[in-house]
Image 1 (cartoon, rainbow over the protein chains, first blue to last red):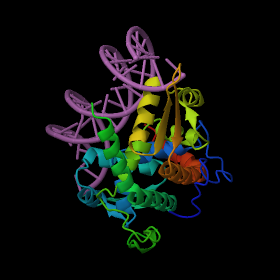
Image 2 (cartoon, protein in one colour):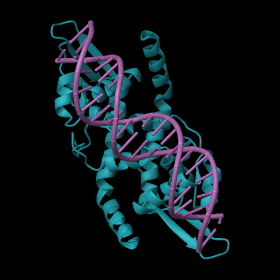
Image 3 (cartoon, rainbow over the protein chains, first blue to last red):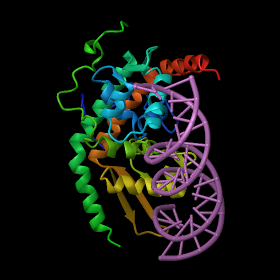
Image 4 (cartoon, each protein chain N blue to C red):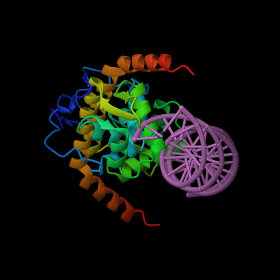
Amino acid sequence: MSVTNTAVTSEVGGTSAHGPCGTDDCGIRDILDRLGDRWTVLVLVELSKGARRFSALQRAIPGISQRMLTLTTKRLSRDGLVERIAYATIPPQVDYRLTAIGRSLAQTVFDLADWSRDHKDAIADARTQWDAANVR
Amino acid sequence: MSVTNTAVTSEVGGTSAHGPCGTDDCGIRDILDRLGDRWTVLVLVELSKGARRFSALQRAIPGISQRMLTLTTKRLSRDGLVERIAYATIPPQVDYRLTAIGRSLAQTVFDLADWSRDHKDAIADARTQWDAANVR
DNA sequence: CCGTATCCGAGATGATACTG
DNA sequence: CAGTATCATCTCGGATACGG
């Protein structure tokens, strides 16, 4: 994680500078709708390593179907997070690469990944406990 | 961008010293599965303001059904992110509050919210452009 | 090679009614 | 008040075939 992790009282730290948007959406829903699906994060991670062809992405991301890779890259394109570069060769070739804003998002996603990694075990333990305490 | 450019400048910064987990999951999928649904983030945001009763949460989050609030709080409980405190009064009363780890996650979510807010307009613009360039 | 169209099942969510 | 049970609906994603 980055900085100043408070957790002083029960309130979440700071919250001050920027409004963490209450019940309403500050746009985070848009982002979560994008990140929340099954493949987008994996595509971002792969593209964060550099530009990739369509077929390279598909090989790099086991289990993704052609259809879902198309949909995922298209959505990322539409949001300006990924740039699509098509060459009029035969056979066709299409490269994808993160835009500046896309790299920025990828970095933020990595921060979240860091958090996940740091708390993975704690969550797994909590689940085990909960499940044990809730045998039917 | 030049066509033959390698990825050097397109890599995401630092990559944060920890492996950002490649195609495999470092646990981020678990977190995204939790955050990616329709209500969890809103519950986290509300609880980050302090402990809340079930009914208070429902009032604070317009549109959430009793069923989904139950499911959402239960999942957060199971993951150890939220503590459930039931009083044996009549009528019953149940308080929910973030645990330490829950506050930590909320803070991370706020960081993501900050990103969203900062790039909301850029994304909206990109979509507008894309849609304009893709009239059917 | 890349993208699209169609069909279909699984899971998520909403509406409603009921219980302690 | 808080939670459960049931049913209907809807979206997501997988499989497959086809097109440029």
